[in-house]
Length: 101
Image 1 (cartoon, rainbow, N blue to C red):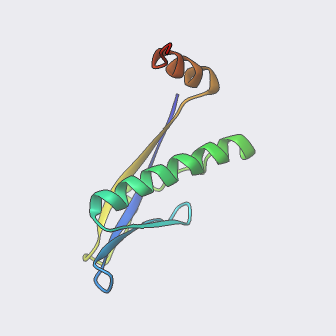
Image 2: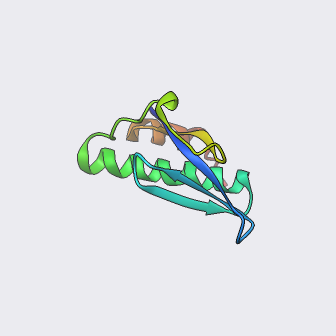
């Protein structure tokens, strides 16, 4: 299993009463109606991005260090993670949770 952790900036969208999360390293942006919703969407998006990058490029770009991320003081820096299992681990996980009906 590979784990990836990227810093992201959480922005309050005052106009729409929602939240936007941007992973600047990867040019990924997503929104949610709550902080939790935006976080979970960013996490899912990062997982898909990492899977595709590994499949097509064989690697994922390195992340900026948390301490190096700059904000204007109004926004919050979060860490978003994604765990990517290889194909054998996926099969084992599915077998563990499958039942005979």
